Image 1 (cartoon, rainbow, N blue to C red):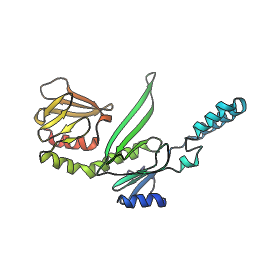
Image 2: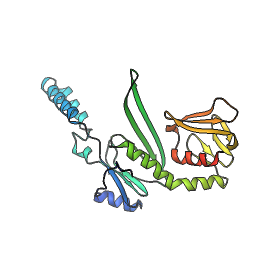
Image 3: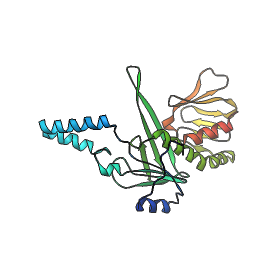
Image 4: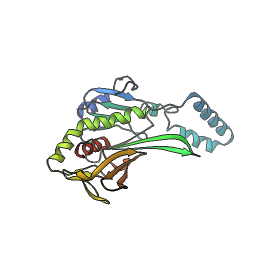
Length: 245
């Protein structure tokens, strides 16, 4: 966990029991829901009171919408994203309950996009989809504070838990799938672009939310795929860069 991460906090009894059951190990950091700044909070309070005074039904609808935010709901404010040595526990942004997923069995997808309004960079959205064995899954967004900390931490944790096993499997002749790509001892492949031998790989680059693969003797890209289509991005990059010339 980086220096900007929040301090470790105590777990609820339910979270502690879930962590023990899934053998998640030591707690490394906890993240609370992101709060509004004071100016925005005051604006929402003023708008709610104004609507309730003039238009009761729209005012009540607006108040109901605000209760989805941690600033206007104790239930939402109590939710947490807990990161452990061997996995994570997260409350969903909407709904109840908690989900526990281990790093050694997760398929983690990331989708980070920045809005551009009239040529000016605006808000950035962070969406991480974690898929565990069976039907276990969780979606983690900037609902939780410091996505620039917990997002890379999750990717690096998955790399530590799965990187060596994935490389070993490939070297022993298996084909390992990463969603849009598969890697084998002879090269990489996609359904659309076919097979590219490792000896023909010229470069692998991540830029503007896409993974670009170029090949020798070709002025253009062999493949350009969205990062959001690749499971366990850091594992994929580490294995591919280890096997490419």
